[in-house]
Image 1: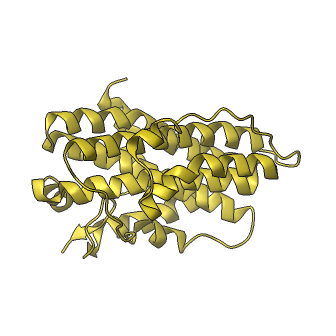
Image 2: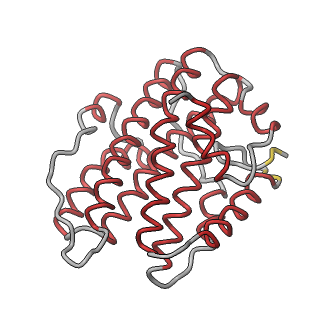
Length: 252
């Protein structure tokens, strides 16, 4: 499957394209550190989201703890600046067996999809950090942008709607990441161009996995909810945003 075929479903799913003004700003060499830094943190947040979903909805207590231990070195690096690239290299694999809760109807499917997602996001985290190291871009703590919070504000507070809405949000975040990687790649140097294009396949699959899980949990048509979050997401992307980040809106 070529890039165009991969992106067509994503373009149909998203209700707007990334504005050219964002691409122009992101392509400026002086903005590369913030793009890479925010991308790094986004990879951890994506892994944390997958982890939270598994622990809340799909596994027993011991499996939940094993999963937390897997993520801990990455969280220590981001939040406490502890550890090195070499430390993280040895923590990419997860070999424990995960036991689904006996009463979870989508437990195994959620586990299978989210464990793969976490593995891939942590691998991408490692790759971004490697690129930053070779370019002497130091890791710094940065504040979160408004994007994910802006979507989560619309999540319903009763089950199973909470889970369905969170899965739909996950689908939009992954789809937007995929679209931005593809749009930005041609404006970057050869190494980054190849790297961002290499991420498209997994990001596209993550969006599909989130959406299929949302449909499975709902057991009914969710197109109205998908449309609702599509409008919210498009508004965040097209409205002015003073805080320039990987998922930010229109640069002011």
